[in-house]
Length: 208
Image (cartoon, rainbow, N blue to C red; front, side, top):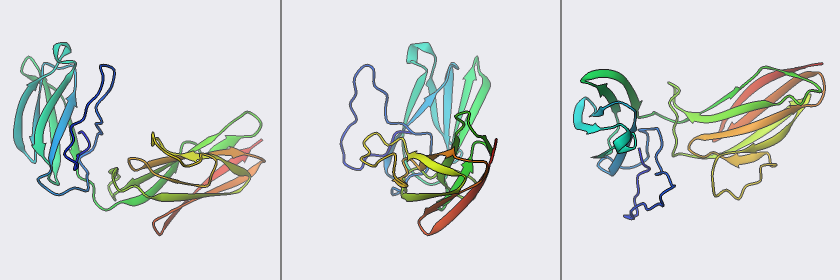
């Protein structure tokens, strides 16, 4: 869905721009806030359900740039988009409102090789107990690397950031940030991420 606007302004863009849409139904806005839902697909049409109630059916396909837009109001719950071609369901996708945001950390590989330019990417997310991303409660994170490695870079996808990618702290964007760790010697690496009173640790090993 498009990010809810509370300033009353309308989004404008050029012929090559995209709308500011995010794949989530979790926003820190009041119920009843007007929102626009975008659904993408190559089926003939799509039906959108909000908490089990149909918001109608809209055409998709090439003539509609593979996109349908539904206007509704926000309320915590679930959205389900059902795609159909020739009246037959071809796919569906659901979005649910996330609960309380917690810090989650995972690494793309548990073992690194020394001397081959190997790097580990530590993914930092704010998500609820079910793993649903919480995109609009961004907060600062601090990363500490100990042992046989070093923090090479830290940042997010925020387009207007003024934070340094070489620092040990950053602010999440849409609930995410990423740290890059480089091995320096054989042995163990401990990466600790702290945010909002929470702390998570992941362990890596470096082989020769």
